[in-house]
Each structure stands twice: as structure tokens, then as C-alpha cells.
Image (cartoon, rainbow, N blue to C red):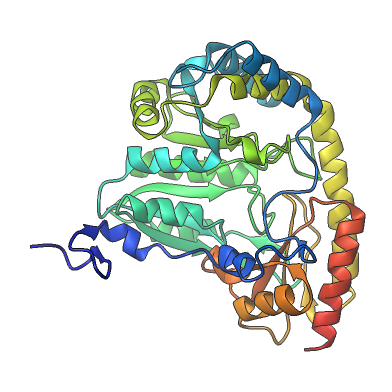
Length: 398
């Protein structure tokens, strides 16, 4: 007998996987598709800016392509890239991180999915600090796990804070991992070193993993790099750090990321990469090496560009009495609430259709996100100013 949870499609005798039936289009995609193809819309809904990948990265990939690096390659990344990642980690955090602790993935999203495939059995759960980019929720459900959320608290000044005790209390006998994104998307909230140490100590005592999404580690405005769990953990602690080339080096379309993990997981991740993708294209990894070795100057420019964009957005929106917003300390998002707007999906659809500006509805980001909207400020001042003009007009018309 077929499970009632499986997906039945009209006209087909066969069924589809149960988790697929529960996966819906993300609210961000729903908003963007509502005006798909309209060139007049100012797109501030996705997590990318308007800069193309720098020349030195593209040139390195093109050189690899022209050299014929188009065959199957190492499952966990070419040796040169893993060595460059090891050197980069040591340079950034002052810790030794040998190449056997590193696995290259097809973007940060695959890093999340591989980790869920590795850690979860059906019925297990992951405790997730939210608001959060929704892919961890989808990945958890896809492997028949259960997402459990601990929402950040919002302070009167609009900033965000985590009550660690709530995380501790949410972990139960079926919890296999705690997922933390710091600096966070969409809030920009950043976990302190003391909080990381306390959470790691708790995870070790309870025998659960920490999955740390540190994709925005370089995009922080109060220091050179955000605190990392890698600075607190030993090489064999139950920690998997997920990272990506997408954000700091403007490489969103390249789909190259990496995992840092205990060395004993290397063979397991190799098997999962083989099953899922067979590895990242060889020539793209050449571009990733160039990003690591030559890209610090570009990152500095990206940080200053985002700092200016964030300040522009904050100054414009904080002037409105109906808006609750905090100055971003990390990542490149403004996550703000508009007094009188509870249905953020309807609000964002109206913005896109009637005012030609694209924002992401807060409900896309899970518990704690309701009633807020997200704006990506990783673009230049001209695009941001045009979008802000339209947002202000929409708010005045409420």
C-alpha cells in the first residue's frame, strides 16, 4: 500500500516522494515570478549585488577551460584548491586546518544538503536559529527530518539577540544537529565568540552536531572577519562549517562552496558528492583558487560598497516613523518592519507590481521573520536610491 504522504499527480498512476509534496515554492520566488520579465522592477529581493565576478577570477577559470580541464575530477575538490582553502583558513583564523578536513561542494546549498544527508535519519530533527534563509528547512524535510526553530529576540532598537537557553531547551532526544547562520541572513545578527563556545560545549555534552553557516563571515563592518566556530573547536569536535564563494567574491552563479569538518568525515562526504554531482567542474575550481589567493582587495572593496549601501538604506528608512530598522553590522541585508503591514507577502507583491521594486517577504525566513521584509543593499547607490524612492512612495500610500 502506498503511503498517504506520497504525492499523487492527476493522470499518473505512479506517485512521487512524500517530502516533495510538502515542498512549496519559496515566497521570494513567488513574489519574483509575479512580475517575471518586467525590466522596470528594481530587484532587491535576492542575495546578490550588481557587480560581476572580478576579472582575475574569471580569467583563471577561462584559462583552465582553455587548457582542457573539462573531465571528471576529484570528488572533494582538486588538491590545489583544498590546499588554498587550508592556507586561507589559517590566514583568516590563525589555526591549522589541513586539507583532509576540507571538501569542495557545488555551492553553499549543496553543502547544506550533503550535511543533512550525512547526519539525519527519518524522524530526526535539527534545531535551527531563525529567521533564516529557507534552504536549511527544505533540505531537512527532503531527507525526512524535522526542523525545530528558536527565534531570535528583537530588541526595542531593532537589533537581534539569541537566548541560548532557548536553544538548549529545544534540543531533545531526536536532535542530531543545531544549525546556526552567523552572520545571519536576513538579520545580520552575529554570534559572539563566548556564545559560540557555550553552544559548542553544550553540543559536545549532548552528542549533537553544530552546523555553522559562515557564508557571510567576511562581510562584517565592525571587524575584519566575524567570529568563527573554527576558532573555538578542536579538529575532532562535532562541528561542520559551511561556506561559499558566492557572496564575498561576487560568485553567486558559479556554485562553488566548501565544508570544513573532522577529517574522519572525508570519505563519507566523498561518497555523497559522487552520488549527488560527481564534483565541481575542474576549471571553475581554478577561479576559486584565484579568489582565495588574489581576492582580499576585492573583498575590501565589497565590504566598503556594502557598508555605504547599508548606511544609505538605514538613513532613508529609519527616518520613517512607521519603520523599525537597525543599522546592519554584517551581511548585506536590511530586515525591517513596517507598522501596519502584517501580510508581508501581499505587501511585497504590491511593491513589485504597483511600485516596481522587489523585496523579500519576511514569512519566507521562518519564525521571527513574520511582519518584516528584506532588502539586499549589495548594489550601487543609483539602484538603491531608485528602489528606496519607490518603497517610500508605497509606505506613504498605506
